[in-house]
Image (cartoon, rainbow, N blue to C red; front, side):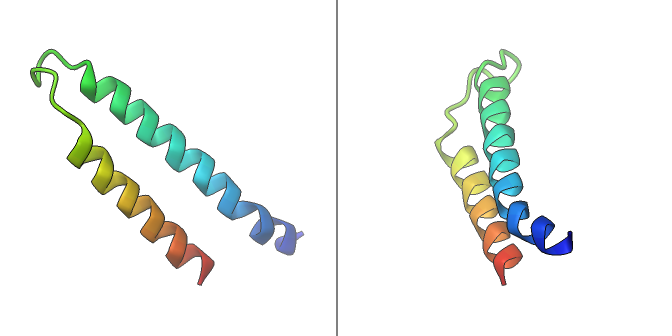
Length: 59
């Protein structure tokens, strides 16, 4: 059972990371309070962190 969890956990992480980035992008880019900021640097850093997290998870 534990081996099954280890096999499925990277896919679960990628799905969660994708959804979090998407939700962050939609909410933050339509924020009138923040004057509709560009998301290139914010989502870029979040994407880099999610890839780094995946790398640490696979080690």
